[in-house]
Structure formats: structure tokens, C-alpha cells
Length: 254
Image (cartoon, rainbow, N blue to C red; front, side):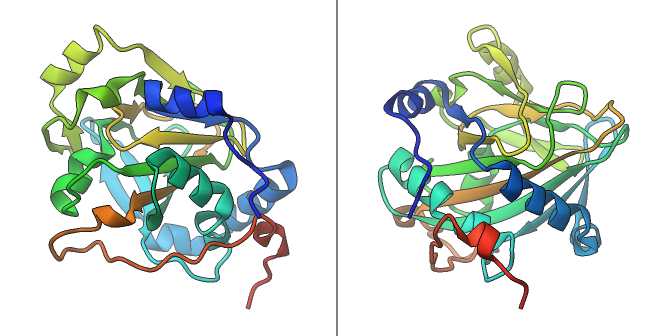
């Protein structure tokens, strides 16, 4: 069962603005367990990519595609995310990736302006922008520690050209700067357990972490089954087997 749903107004907000924030989507007990697991998981650091921004500052991200019976998969397979994404996209979805974003205190690098579809389209051969990301705040996200910034409604622009910026792929700044004249820049400040659902064509970025505390988040991404890669690439389709909401607190290590 899915005990969390978006309201009709929240769904309308998503289609108008390209994103919606679900406050307190995971309760204190669930998020405390996620914090304890992630902050004590040395394998995240061992497997993390180190991505430099345009100024050379480094952000760390650990990414995987296949879900399983591990604790993180109780989120990415959870009906709480899957059911909402299917309602927003309007059809059945599958999991494409989960990543843990690790912005360390004072040194966590920026992520340049980009659209997820800007590189999913080319790198993973997605034809249509029928994909959604779900950002779960592991700890507090503020302006000071480099919270996500979005251009409200910018998903209506369609896909912009992307090119390499540092170790990242960023949207063409000429078009981003023009878009900023018409689309409000919003700082997405989140409390632990809040979830940001955002469209794959929404322009977003984050600044460097200038605060004394880290800024960690888990981002689960989903794509319409009809929008699977049309050409073989590193993105592999794995069948999605959803689990009920109680799986997070009922999970036990093997």
C-alpha cells in the first residue's frame, strides 16, 4: 500500500512549474534510519565519483542502476515514489538510477546549470522527456550548504544543448541566461524527509557548500517503460518490483 499521495493541486503545480515539494514525505523514524545507514556506509565513499565544477571544486556522487533487497532499494522500489511518478508521467515506470549526493562541509563543489534530459537523451538514448527525479533530503538543505536551485517552469523550454563544464555536462549558458529573464530562480530548501519531484527538462543547479555541515541527498530516477533506450548503452533496463511503504522500517540486513 502507498500511504502517501500528492494532492490534485500538487500534481497541477508539478506540470505548471516542473517540480513540486512534498514536505515530510518520510517521517522522522524513516529518515533517521536513512541518515544512520548512509553516514556510516564507507562503501559510498569507496564507490563515489569525484566531479569537478567549473572552478575545480569537487562534489562526490555514488550512483547505481539495479535495485535489490538492500536498504536504499526500500526507497527506490517504494510505492511512495513509484506510484507518484506513474501518476505524474501518466504511465508505468521503471527505475533508472539511484544516487547519493555527498556535498562535504566547506569543500562540496557546485553542480552547473543543466537538465537531466540534456544528457540522458544523448548518453542513454531516451527519445522522449518522460522521466522524473525524486530528491530525498537526507539532511537539511539550505542556501548556505548548497541546496538545489531551479528555474521555475523552465521544463517548458524543451531540451537545451549541453556541453562539458569541468567534469560535468552543463546547459548552454546563453540560453540559460535568457531563460532567467522569464523564469523565477527558486532556492529549494528542504528539511530531512522532504522530497522534491522534478521533471527531467527542469533547469537546475547547486552552489558550493559554504557551511560547516554536509548536504546529502538521495535521488531516485524513473523513466516511462515505453521510453526505454532505443540503442544499447551503459543504462540497462531492470524490471521494477515495488515494495510497500512499511518496507523501510521493516527492513533487516541479510
